[in-house]
Image (cartoon, rainbow over all chains, first blue to last red; front, side, top):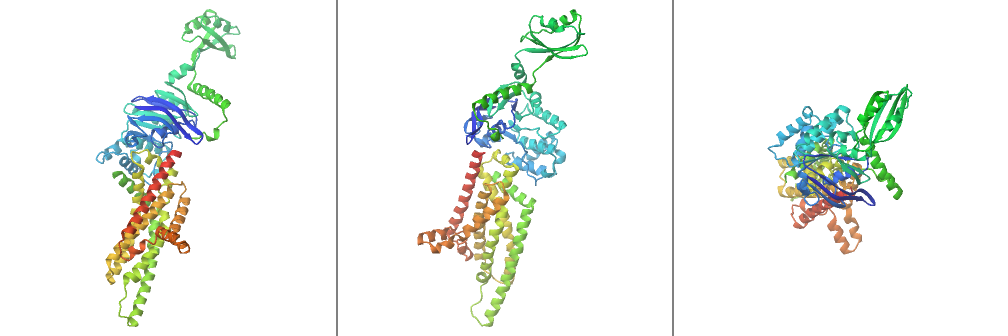
Length: 327
Length: 255
């Protein structure tokens, strides 16, 4: 549905997007993850035809965005970071205008407007001026605007930014509902959002693709070993040695100790399930097993390890460009 | 065409949804009414004096009142037009709605033409206000309608030139005050560009005279439709819109 090849965007000497390539299949929710200024917005602006790329190719819904911009744009719905509302129009007038310029046939306009207003739950606001809407409603009207021409591809730039927790959950739910009929690309710098909504993620840092995978694979890939947390009632005895003697266990670290209760982090070889052995070892040695759970590397840690590694390398190689890295 | 119309409609709507249309039209009507009243007084006194001195030749209302009136009108256009065009692109850029327009399946030209015709429509509304006063002259006198018709055509084209320059300047900045001031400056310069002509050589003189945007209106107010002036105005407008298209396009590349 979306194919991006070697996309590059330079502003003078600053490279905002550097040789980015990826594919998004039909019906997928694809996440763009990266710190602020990583090039997410720039990539999205290129995909929507807002600005041309310096180099590379982007095909959206079968149309090259540079060669056939109008055809491609017909199939794209775009919600920029700030919803592009006209403050002096009412919600209904605004959606009617957008429907016109997005090429919705005049006979279908009324029905479409009604549908998207229901879908984004803004029907009760239809007579209100856009300038009088709260942040949450502005965002929803922005989403309604992106949906009005029933596009194949939805590109959403930080759709949950600035919303309250309830609205965030609603918006995520809505995006998930949309995924079946539409291909969705969304950007965010909030990590849980990606693991909750996206099927695949691309992590971008300083304009470069750092990783593309499913959220689960990303977290798994970065784990060199499996780690378990085991809490035992050791009553002063050394349970750590007993755990370390189990085959497959590579390392045991005592992580906390309180009133005779000791917590251990137990690393084991990858792909080897040592849970049964751990439990048996604890119990057969006469300790009380209070807690045992796998320790997963969260996406946060994945993200940090990926992006900091990368930036450390780069900082060593060239002068820092923090000031320019705003998107 | 539908797209151009949709954008023109939206532009016109937004003029009337904000105070701009009311201020501009109100000021226009006030000042125009003042010009009209004073010129009418002047004309009445003149024609009375003429008849007192027993002049045989009747006074001509077209020549001695309406033409002067429209000369004053052009000055109003100079002052008020920047107020109309200053926001057209600047406001969209500032509020981010330009992202909606540029990512919609419309071409740059459709957007520009939409904005142009939207502003031109507002200007046409302003000109329509002046028709009322002219109508009064038809009730109490018998002016010739042909020179009046050509004058309106000329004024429409003349205003179109200002709109095209105003759009260009508005597309260059996010700041409406900057757009207003720069537009006014450029309009005024285009107005008086032939002043230096008399001090320059014949080639430069004729060039500057040709460039002066006001000189070409002269024949229209006399009731003469000369293709030279039509071509001048139409090519002026086209060139202004062309530069606006280039400006919008280059803005894209620069981001």
